[in-house]
Length: 385
Ligand code: GCU
Image (cartoon, rainbow, N blue to C red; front, side, top):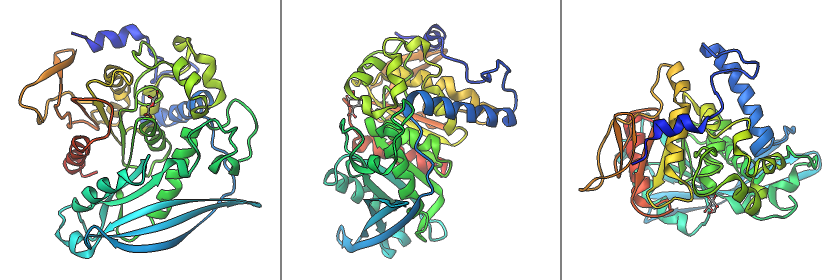
């Protein structure tokens, strides 16, 4: 059995609640300053800075169609970013339940619906998700990450990368930052829709896109709930002491996901001036949902739990609980244990939905499956997020 609270101490994570100057953070006002320091550190050493250009944004609805047996209207929208003589256009698909579905849904409040901003891999696969979410009364905005910037080493010539002038420096944004920023620009559009509830916006992604959703939620305060599914290294899992994928794997196989500085820390995790609990801390006190799979040892569920616990003091500063291990509903008849935290046993297939960080680890391998979506919807209902 693993004792994660003991492991957390042994991993010697950098302190969240202390300024770079050494001064302790003791109030919300202090934290807001420290938060800015943390944001700079993460952009500088891990994800890169997305240039702050004077960007003009416009959108055009290219096509509208009734889908899923008249349960929803799908709009294919193109978002165009312009700056000087540069322009870049990418698509976002919007699915809005029809009036009949909205009227019947308990999730409709004053005519407004909770939103899923879904950063996905595959347009075909996203359709079953879309229908499931429509049946449950959500508004879905879907972007395909490869249509924003190709997921490959392309010298930052492809997609939105070419739109941003690059300094050719080690702080230039990696693809995760670019995908996340494009999701935020899609959210600018979504918030113009009369049915979108600005108080119930969730961003979601799986795996590399779980990392992307996490960073998006960390950078965009309009997002009330960030959902990172199987996000692992470069996502929710702390790098120090992590099993499975390490910084050296990320920077060898996917250097273009991150900024150049990150590669300096391959095999030197202990020297990183941050760890992934810093990313979570930027989301606090807004909600985060972390989902894992038992067999996803490459992502390392235990290192994600440690990160959530390490970020929880920021929630506490706001009078909220971060990750609560009070056991909720179980989705399996027979329980299996994953690890211990103090007196609590963390079980596979159990919903941990009491805190501002919601959590579950289900059986099986790396994927964002229906069981995950159902538990996530359950958490949204419980927390009105
Ligand atoms: C690889 C990578 C992971 C990533 C995953 C995915 O396995 O090592 O970091 O999460 O791909 O995106 O599917």
